[in-house]
Each structure stands twice: as C-alpha cells, then as structure tokens.
Length: 158
Image 1 (cartoon, rainbow, N blue to C red):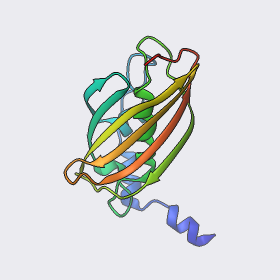
Image 2 (cartoon, rainbow, N blue to C red):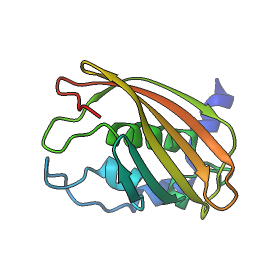
Image 3 (cartoon, one colour):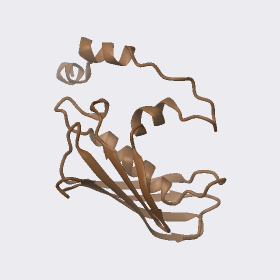
C-alpha cells in the first residue's frame, strides 16, 4: 500500500504547477469549462466532411505523464471528444458516451504533432458508432485506435 501511495503522490514541483493554474469561471453554454480548456486547448479542426472530422493537435507538456509521453487518459479524452464531435449536430444536445474501446499502439511525446481522424461507422435510431484514429503526423505511426459508442435522443442522420 505504501508503494502505491508513494507512486500517486505529487512532487512539490507538480503540486506547485497545479496550484499556479489560472482559468476563467465557467459560464454554461457560452464558454468552455476548465476541463475543456485544459484538455483540448490547441486542437485544430482542419476539415469536416459528412461523417468525418480531421484534426491536428500538438502534444502539450501539460498532458504528458512522468515519462514525458502523452498520457493514456489524454488519448482517451481525444477519442471521446472527437468521436462525439463527428456525430454532433449544432443546436441539439450532445450525445452521451455509452462505451469506448481504445487500443494503445504506440506513444507520443510533448511537441509531437498528431493527426486525429474521427469517422461515423453507423447510426441506428439514437445510437451512433464512431472510430477515431490518432496518428503521429510526421511519421504516420498509429498511436491509438478507438471505437466510441454514443446515444442521444436526437441522433443525426449522416
């Protein structure tokens, strides 16, 4: 138990970095939340096509683990957000994630530019299935592949 406790404890430097974070208050519907600001700041939507969205994202140090690699939770967040965005219809409520399955195939480090491609696999009623690929834009290496299932009352028709 002590070993686990030691592993998850923050160093003084890490604690100071978290304590120094400044973020604006969240106003529902008008501004992004702290979570969105922290995890998605820097993502760029390059192209949108019916049933597809193409993004790029430069890995920031704030989303890396102690080894300097993009944290697996950050990758899961990208799969969740891009998978949800590809089925989003403006003016309707966001769909709710039902299930995600992610294969972590490689790693990325701070400064790497990623290409993130979200695609709709299919829709039936309020259920949508999406696929999200996360690749190193320079090398083409596949970092992760995610499958994302969502449900919404107002599923879009692609």
